[in-house]
Picture (cartoon, rainbow, N blue to C red):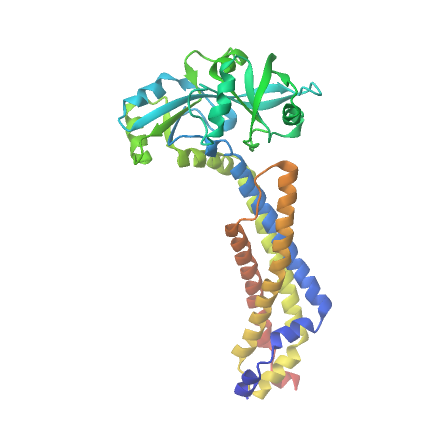
Length: 389
């Protein structure tokens, strides 16, 4: 009998799900909602972590020197600039760039309101970012009081980019001193900075005269082709005093991410939100499948009386869970992608649908549905033909 049923390939799981379309739609809506919630929570978490290293990834460096007192980019501590010069003694060091990093008050040239902006100061003749176009624009900074403004900064800094493209002279104040926008760069806001500007070391020190003489916040080191950054980093750190730390570029990026991940509540909050979405989805799917099995318990008992093994009926419930996962994931993926685009346009945070996250959420929805199906299967053991007939 079982062979006859299997040869006819009756889509029993699909028939049971579609027998009550309203219940099916409610189940799919619940699964999609849980998926959207997981997409948004994980997207916000990863987007904020990525946003915290927007500038870090752009630096033209193989190694980075920092003070051991620095905890994150929002509070850079200074260290003696001579430590960076001392790294030139290593035969595999090709070049260095001292960098000043601090937050200053930018005055909106239109509304006259002030807002904190990340200011980077460096020697215009030194490489700073991997973008070769910056080298041409850096020549504009040789005149004191000139800055390059990040055109992707938040609009609260004023219509600087639009005015500059219109050919207008854009003057503003930074830390109470007049500056002139000499050009535009495209960097993007980070989690710790809503806007960015680049200037020469000379102008930076004029804007922040309290800077300790000879100190810097970052030291960028470029190595000879083929050099091992990890080995050179260990060698330099061993040869210098303990008032500096040496990171590879990847370690520098991970150091910043780890601060936001472990030293703040951001990672925990968004991970907890994703976990709550998973739990909500489990409850919804379990209730739907449990109700479905309970409503059709006489039919399951009839099949058992006809000779169908319990394993075949368990497989029916498992297929129901699989179908719910497949049909519930599609709307969640589409809605999540649309919401990512909305968030990115509104906040300029790097939130996008990434393949790894899409697969992770699909895996979570699949586990959610199959786990709930496994719990609902226990009801099948109550399908006793003797009691029903």
